[in-house]
Image (cartoon, rainbow, N blue to C red; front, top):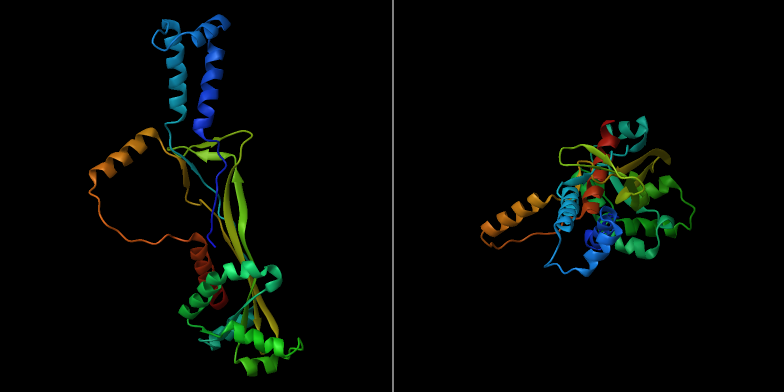
Length: 278
């Protein structure tokens, strides 16, 4: 599953013919407009030439500036306990298991997001935790027929903490009617909304030995915090084309950056930092 986003904006190629016709009709008298439709382009009048030039200039003026979107970072929502912090101060390499709340996802979503679960476990390993196999842990719980004695569960699983992924939302919509020009000036478009997808992930931590609720951690991915370009100026497009023409064709290798996976890794790193130090 890839983390996709979209932007709701009408294509210029669709609007341009309508815009031209409306503007020309507005500028010209009825007789001039009728005669303009009948004339060929090889025999324009001086008056019509002037109006066409005026309309073209107006369109180009509105299409020659770079525009970008910006959203304010949404705050994380964290509930901590001193008990967990004290435990982690005494246990530098705690044994943890990741559990996925199946009621919050269907089977297809769980299968499609398995690479994200692996990313969480890898980040926990990289942070110095000992990570238990989540499938074996689930088997132990299922064998207990839902009568879970947490002290026995700790002995059988040899696990200290359960980190439960309670919610993963990859379609949090951010919208605005504002954009910023190339001089970072705020502009407002009435009756129109730009939209981008964000995401959120929520963890719950349980200490198995005491069956103690130890914290809830919700992290948010907000798109375009530093700005996302939604249109480029004509001069900037020309410069980019010229640079590419002047560059020699070279072989390269690369992988596509997955924003959602990167967000999940960063969220897991922040989770560990919050658990240990705050």
